Length: 78
Image (tube, rainbow, N blue to C red; front, top):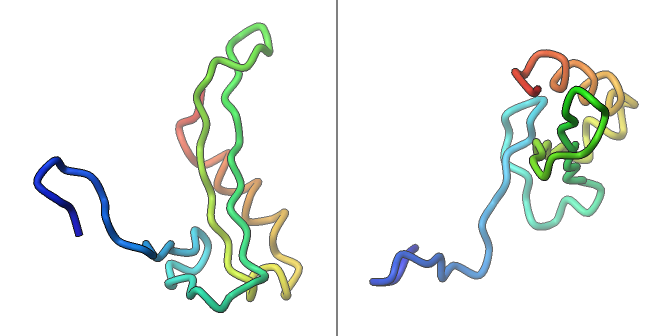
């Protein structure tokens, strides 16, 4: 919900798992959110990043590395 100034005023904004597209509930304490920084052609961080949210189920199945690498290589992150 937003107020008249356009700011979010909700106490909880649910996230979606990047791997399964399921909502990450507030009780999923194993869920993680990872920011991966973008580098320029010289390997220097340029201030931009891509965010991935992964639920605890993905982590429990030991698919975290596979998901992060596949998302990072599939997105157009330069």
